[in-house]
Image (cartoon, rainbow, N blue to C red; front, top):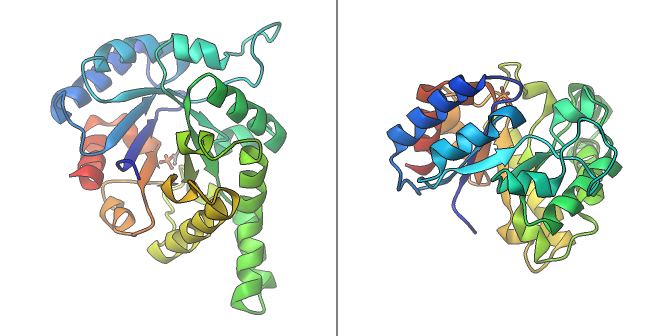
Length: 264
Ligand code: PEP
């Protein structure tokens, strides 16, 4: 398996000058040759170029937060996978819960985004996770552990099967799965180590069932209110191959501490 992966998702934050300062300060702190873990910055589209320039001499990679599922054409306001490559991106986040739940993205649209991005050579961070209502329903309906698990895992199975079904063994090695329980994103609530381990184990089982040759090499990240105060616990979970960080990636001090906790 590749090195652990730490992704900073800046969401709709930071003007270009702020983005330049933050990415420049991060590269200074890490040092240009830092490669104990793979770091990816995902700024808003408007700041891709300034961040690309700041990180160009380092091992930090550029990522986008979204992509459109068509090659080109009359899709006002959208950005294609080849445009992201042209802008210097190596990665793209697909299926983030804010896009699924606020912007109404469907599993079918996510599958199209995944397959076009892969064909353009982008690496993908595919986000999956259950809502609070789905988790509560699983707890309510569970007469036994197996039934609880079946209900809990069901939304994740649907999201993963739909997004990955057209990929082959080679293509899936360009994917990292980010398990992000929706109720933990931006809320300050974090899943416990046991909850994270249980879902990551399930995701691994599903990956190896779908891709017997390469499912074991796909990195599985955790995301959802990752902070300096909980990163040590999260990264000590054996099944965690990295983290997807929102709010705490907007401060150089906290993001740097998180990266060092993951990579050393
Ligand atoms: C995210 O943006 O994917 C995320 C997990 O956000 P936060 O760390 O702020 O919960």
